[in-house]
Amino acid sequence: MATTYNWDCKTVDVYPTHDTNTNVVYNIHWRVNGISDQLDAEGNPYQAKSIGTQILTTDDITNFISFENLTNEILVGWTKDAMGAEEVTLIEATVEGLITSKIAPTSVTLTIGGE
Figure 1: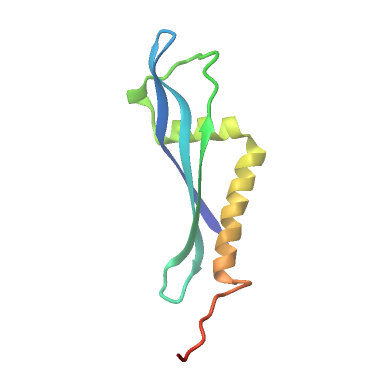
Figure 2: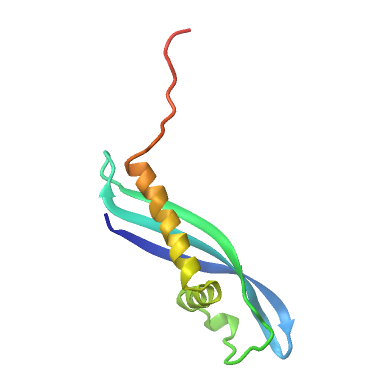
């Protein structure tokens, strides 16, 4: 099974002013969507997601990028850098585990018939 991970980091919290800069990002709301190459009975790929936030340090801002020039790619890079590779791997592994549980559940809930 191969899973594609899409990081969405488009929602941010900003300081309206910080030092001499405006709209300084200090917290990123991230969402990781995992999409499997395996399909369910209806032909749809199995999917799972994880969400959270990542605080950024604003103590020493160098190479400031104005808010209107930010992209999802830039914010994903900042998020992953702040998390570190180990945390990024853990998040993606968690999403992978959720997908695996959908493909081959280890537990299901059933209801008996009758009155």
